[in-house]
Length: 421
Image 1 (cartoon, rainbow, N blue to C red):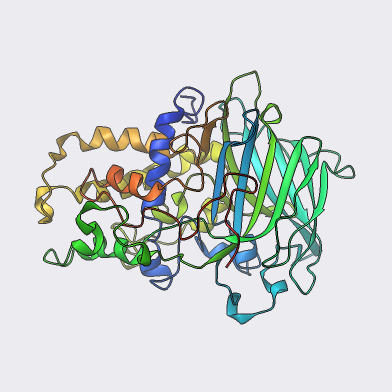
Image 2: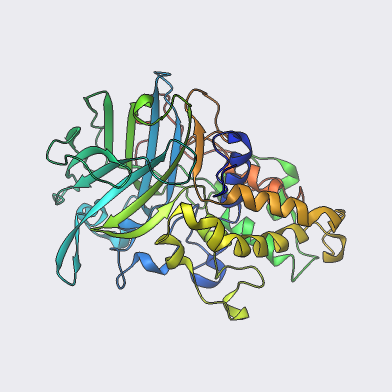
């Protein structure tokens, strides 16, 4: 582990473990900051994504990111980021396709600033970007399609932007994938089925048990069947706007070590609007969230925008205490004193929580690009991060949300995400 807490170089598996811990409470923040029907791995995770102070709403709101070895070429790595979450087939607010496009430029004090979508790559384990792969878009046509270009830059986002590594056009809604292959990079940008699957209402029922221990736990546990209630997938028939890149792994790795760290950011000019590594770190662990002592009702001010504007290299110093607070509460769900049937001896909780917090921060998705394994190694679309996380952060008190797969099958070839609804 480095001094920053990044465990990817030597402990990719452990890091993945807690990547789970993030997705678990995915929807948690909704209970006090949004409708009970609208959140996900990182969907709508902070007030800072809407103007003011920045963003264009969901166009700069990262919902999920993925990183995994290509399924068709072991020497390549797939990187995916999604925005424009919670958009059904009819569009957001029944608006035109152009309303669901990737952001282009947003107003600032001194004029419009370009919006960029960035994959940040750490190749040496210091929680700082060594390479940035940047994607930018032109204005949307009425069908939602846009010109885009991909640039491979240094860690600070500098490079020859006048010579794009790849140029192409995103797809209109419902049209086939557009694949552009140049300089060893394949890129797709356009509408896709939201690959995240999760029973949000069932999860929130877990929280309800704390107030009503006699409540019907079968709503969540379903007899332990991970595929017991696919109809309860909150993201059933929902779409996102996806950027999918398949790149030579040698572009991402540093000194020959195949372990890298990946996170994504959306930026307006020099200002960072949103960031994401593991699922739901901000949503679950950064105040205010649904868990004491970090709820709005406890008087805890929101720090979510501050987190989104930050950098992984300072995560441990800035946020470790907040993560520990939330984990203390989540671990308590399995204690006998809660009245929920827990049998855990809490005497060893402090050590486990400290170790888990050290994995959760910094907020970076770690992946060994030489391995085809999924979560805990990186994250693939089909990985059921919620079930893995539920058991982890509740010490086995809850093991499944009973939604064991996506509502649409994932293709085994590029762009790896299902067609939009």
